[in-house]
Image: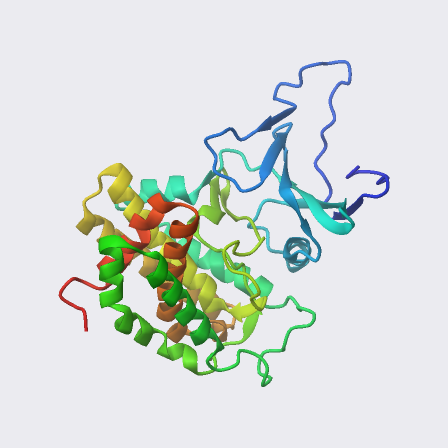
Length: 354
């Protein structure tokens, strides 16, 4: 279907040519599995199948009604020459219950790939933060490519409708309120005691952003960055599954903040699962964060686009992200609460309540 005629009612949007899957048709075995999944140990919302160790077909479960951001973003990244992702081959669409839906995505298989909840935790356990400079450059390259993607029907940065002052602050305050409501026990009491301090962190969101609004990844954490045989790759452009009805254009600082907070979460995972001393983990997280931001700033400056990052927004977005992690833990994965609470306790020590 992806290589030739597409039978109705299906449709295919092609991005890059598929790799050859040819082999002797008389052979039952081609040296690798014809198809396999990733196994039950891989946590995934959808269902992915590896074909001949060359192509990954991700079936969306359930199918997602169009329009969907991923095909548009993948097409643009190909045009922009951004190659630090799994090579996008095609998107399969078709009707489901009377609505046209995205059914599956075909991308390249990256040999020896591990996501950041594995390889990055290894780095935290070793206390090595040198990798984070490369992550900063990678995020900057992604934003440089996405910054040229037009988004139909959304305000252009710089117009009165774009990034209305206070809108981001209202969204962040809503996340804090929901986190306070859903977080119980000792953690809830600790959070409530620092609620005013956390609200003040959102003050920079009450004024217009000092950077243009661009199409961002929307769910950029270390779990979306694969380390594979030939480097790093950003994956999964579906957006944040826990946040709905958001403008597709956001300050780049929102992605940056989610990426830096995920480094903090990695440190908490290393403490919980690898026995890393808390002080050593906190020191590693601080070093990794600074290296990431240094690499990010340097890449933007080298490309003549330092204006893409408004650094005033990083901390408010980081705090909002931790609130959203608490919401996610309460609604979907209670055992995860230790990670955002561990980060917040590191940021706001016991003696610092005012």
